[in-house]
Image (cartoon, rainbow, N blue to C red; front, side, top):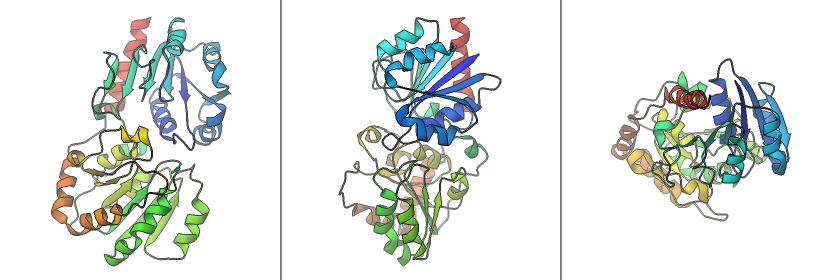
Length: 329
């Protein structure tokens, strides 16, 4: 079976769509896998996909025709919202279409749409899957050891996705460094491959103690295994933290992230208002200090995370996708 993954990744939408599609592709054993993207996404996709899969780069206007020219049996769209015309154009050729994170008019007409970042239905349609039950972790987390609760906080992780478009790694670190020094809490900053402020942040970190900086690691799970609290954005990382039993503070980086409903106290996270340029983030050190000194509150959040385990979700989702392909035949 030939499978075409259409993905997007840049400084605005981040890298999560590429990571998710790569993880799903790795699970499609013995299938002919191809990737396509638009010109704007080419640098990010080339960097992450590398030589693992064939990659075609096309203008957005010609994307549908280029995909058809590849003669796929299955097209997986991980590009945020799609349109009904585009999805219908693919389906009329007998192609099975699966979409991820799609709130557009194409979501209802795809054979399957997976909106795992939303805990409740925003659109109607029996073909749409909602909620964390359909989230799957990347391969590195399948062997990672979820954390046990520790009575004192020794480490905090800062990580804001693949691009960190607002430079929150630096801004938040500057906000919390005095609190962390006061309580002797080590700060681990992990930045993604698309982060543009690395050189400046690296210089800042090199001039102080009690902090480490890791860039573009392929094994962030190893870093997570030693930390007690996280400060992060409201994307897929929240689910990875939940998988590792790490409570934390969540700062949505834009309005789309604000709609992701999983991050809330009921699920072990304190969610702030979406970040806008110039926001002081004065609440962050206050919230962090409370988590450091208030063991009971931190344990309450931790205990709410223990119920989450995302292992096995990928195979169940693959089974659903392959069922759609069999039904189409």
